[in-house]
Image (cartoon, rainbow, N blue to C red; front, side, top):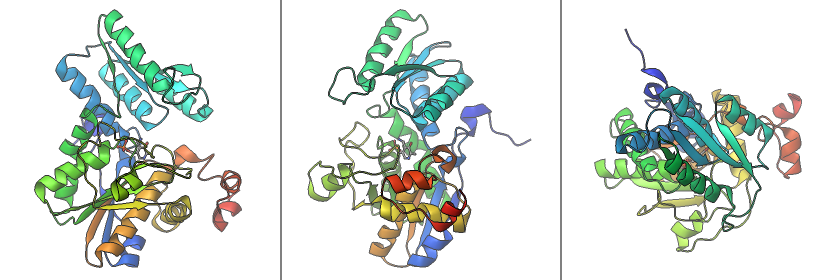
Length: 336
Ligand code: PMP
């Protein structure tokens, strides 16, 4: 018999997909790690499980305990599903301005939602701080324990990628990988994979693909954390050095605008048959730039983060794109 052991046993060991157009265009071998094939549909399943597993091992979480996080995206879905599979309650604190689709999705996955007003990070009532306080209260009052997943600063997140994603990439490329690049939300993926690959080959090149509005491109290029502009991408774009980014160095930082990444994500759908979210477009556009800088003959790996089905009302909606001043491809207009 061949099977995977439940939800958490199905996380990881994702295939590496050769991106034919990007490879042919650059003379390099460009591969996307198919993280959208994780059972919860995104790369964040790995972080969710790594964080919960770490809490179990520390004895911070027992059966029927509570997982608390402030998030509106893939991490919430991953945590709720890991929670269902391992017997924990999941409480997600989210700004009330988030889309109805996201709230519905979290509820369907079993999360209890606490909606709070959308206020900036420096305000103590920001959803991240509210989730931290709530976790503290529940940890004190719930007999089975409660944890604050704290994906941005909890290094169990990058450890998960250090122990799984990075070694998988090394083995799947037979150690021939020359460069790895991706965007940053928490930094868990980039830092964890970079640490694992550099441990095996200190000369490996690490790239960052940063959307406008995020501060990391300027930080790794010029030493100054500064973000300007905006992007329609979701789940990426960071303006501080999170706990997961601590100690990371980047060889090739790039800023990737929507005008550059959207054609790549649409091209992957039309010509490769891959229906992906916008952050995957940023990643592959970054990989193409890195391929040009390294020159032909190199092997570059990036991440295909999540499914495009999560973004039908935005990335794949011509009316939304026009509203943002972005062009929509002809076939998408015709599909209306
Ligand atoms: N893409 C998407 C769609 C995401 O949800 C996330 C996670 N926030 C990322 C990329 C970035 O991953 P990480 O948090 O590991 O930096």
